[in-house]
Length: 80
Image 1: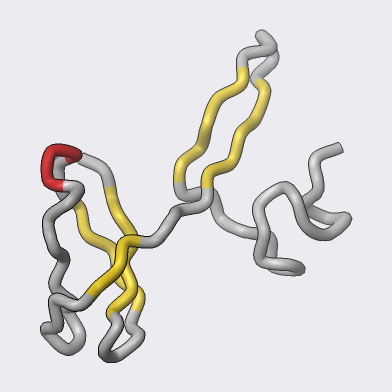
Image 2 (image 1 turned 90 degrees about the horizontal axis):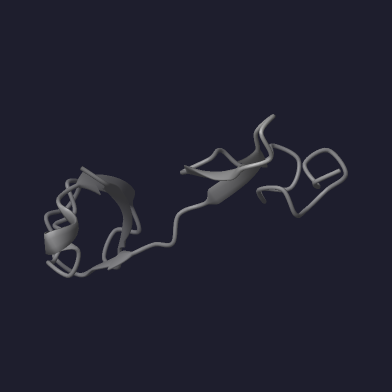
């Protein structure tokens, strides 16, 4: 089951919700303040090429501590 990231418009809290893809358009309730005024965020996705040359996605890949981007920002996370 996919995990979706949300941000509350009321208290600005970010949180995650696991739900089926069939419920992607349903409202998420903020666990902090109970508001249903939330927005789904776009998650980071990273790609890598395996030894067999196939590119694979890693959903929710962590971002670079130096620039906050994934594979596109500073010299330490830019693809080589």
